[in-house]
Image (cartoon, rainbow, N blue to C red):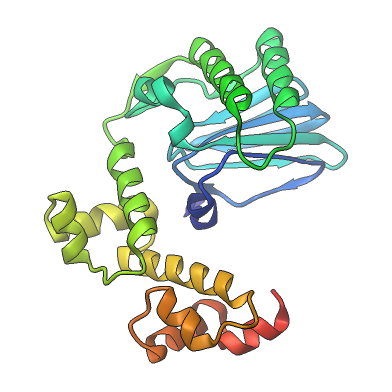
Length: 261
């Protein structure tokens, strides 16, 4: 399976807790740490080149940029907790350029401790101090449960995150491969290969995706014109905006807006 870069997850970059009862997502990767857990029934997890069927009381941990896919059998109850790097602190330093020897946690006591923290986190809009403390407890527990080994092929999480954050902060400006390479002090050809190798999308297309996402958010306000949404999102011309929009969504911005997708 070829993993896809989780663009939406990367752009949201927030603490996320989800639960479901059957099915699962695609094989993907992102910078955030993702913890999959089975409360009832059975499920399964692919993490990089490893697969394991799972049962109630077990967890699977995808570290930063680990390719992964999780699923639940019919009638099962599972969930996942996604933690952005900005909340990982010392755990990120400990796992930088490393992989888990065994990314699956089957210890009942560890699972109970994890679920207790998850239940205490509950629903939220922005993590408060208590929530951040609970995340540190979870990461500390994982640090004790997992063994790590060096990865010679590991992605540079620091560079990757800085690149994504820089683009997310500056997409409204005129950005190019050359200008970004200059900011980060890298050769443009190297940076281009690096980005495409690890994110499976070219740097220029990623910038376009960020701009399209912003345009769609602006289009939700019906008082905004298409032109305003295009230029406010960083597109240099309406022609470029319309072409990019149709290539990505298969319709015009006006058609997209009228479908209320």
